[in-house]
Length: 108
Image (cartoon, rainbow, N blue to C red):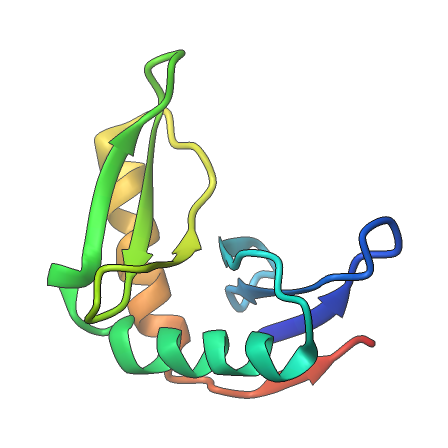
């Protein structure tokens, strides 16, 4: 399930995709308005099932994470940090599996 929320500090809008167990598996960038945020969610729904849209990155401390990109190459979501390659791959599969539940909960 997707959740859309507004940061109290910046007043910008964000989304997060949660797995059935409540774990956040993908977060979006900050958007100036809710319409842009909803468009970001739609882009995840469109691109999230395509494994070619994922790019694996490595942080300075060696942990890996992934980003999801749109067809034009723009980053539309980022994962948490993973300690293992298998955890990272499971995270990518989890995004693909959880976008099937395209419900959006508006927390604003």
